[in-house]
Length: 149
Image (cartoon, rainbow, N blue to C red; front, side, top):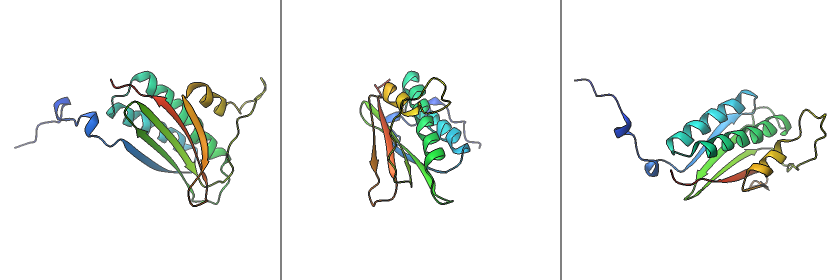
C-alpha cells in the first residue's frame, strides 16, 4: 500500500526543528547564492516573519560576498554560514580562514562597492567581528529580532 503524501499536518512543528544549523560552502561566487537559498529554506521551516527573512538573507549575502572576495586564503578553504534561532533573536554568522577583521569604510558616491558593512550596521540590531577560537580566521555576525509567528 502506498504511503500517503506528506502534508502540512505531518510537518514537524518549528519548536521540534534544529535551532542551530551550519553550512560549509566552497569559497566561490556560487556559494553566495547557495547560502541565500539555504537561509530562506531554513527560515521557512522556522516560520520566521517574511521581513526578518528578507533582511537576514540580504545581510547574509553581504557577509558571504565579503568573505568570498576578501578572504585571501589558500585554495580549498571553506566558508561557513551558521544560523542560530533563540527565543526572540536570529543570529547569523559567516566564518572564513583569513585573520584580518573587516572594518566598515565610507564609500564615495562613485564607488561600486564598500557599502556592505554599512548596510549590516544599519539593518541589524547588533553585529560584530571576532577572531576564531584556535587562531585561524574570523567570524562576522549579525543579530535580528525574530518574534514568534
